[in-house]
Length: 281
Ligand code: AMP
Image (cartoon, rainbow, N blue to C red; front, side, top):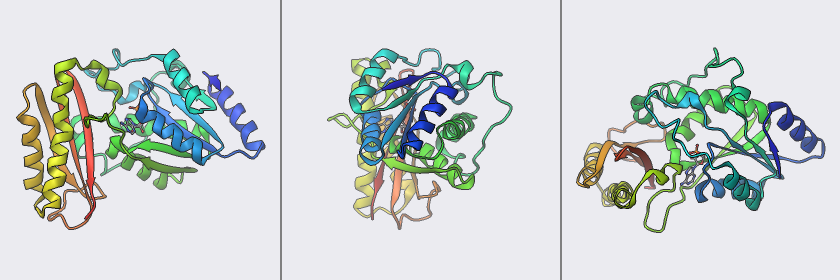
């Protein structure tokens, strides 16, 4: 496994791989790797010739009062996990390497799918995501890129952006990896103490409640979302931010009559968590 800190070094290595006829898989992350990230790597390793994993905590996608400075950065452990999972190239640039002139003057903005939920609560977040992902796609070049359904809205934003800008990237969504008790894996789970971790189970419990209601025939999305919100609100120490039922375009339907997705966000102590589940009708 090669570790690249510069754009130039990664580009040269990938040019050599392509000359040798290799296809490229790409897994962008912010590091603090867990089994969710590794599932994306495994998918890439099994379906492409060489896998690139990027580790970059992107300042552009953090709000002023968010956790940029305390975000975990266990690089040595990440490199071990990446190597064991079969990554060929790690791209771990500094902030200065990615944004040599400071905050870039160019920003990528995706409309509409960025407006509800995360976009409404985290102004500027998706512009930061779209801008860094466009830049990473430009550095990596033609590839298949693997993203987790854990960040459902982000996946929709990246798909929209790649299609709209004809980026030479096939975007593949991969299922959410959970702990046996239902908690979705997240790099932010390390912030939770024991009691908070137990309280955080209310997110997946709330989603299961929502899925059950839809499966049992409830067709009013507002009825479902308020029941989901209540499961979280009933848990001491959990401050729910939203519960939404949306269609494929991330719009709330008048009536649930096709496959839908239930999404939630909540604060557990100072830690903000998101999760979602799909319902196939
Ligand atoms: P992050 O490091 O949080 O930016 O996540 C990097 C990638 O891993 C994103 O595509 C996430 O959606 C994905 N990911 C994070 N957590 C999980 C999980 N529990 N299951 C599957 N994919 C995940």
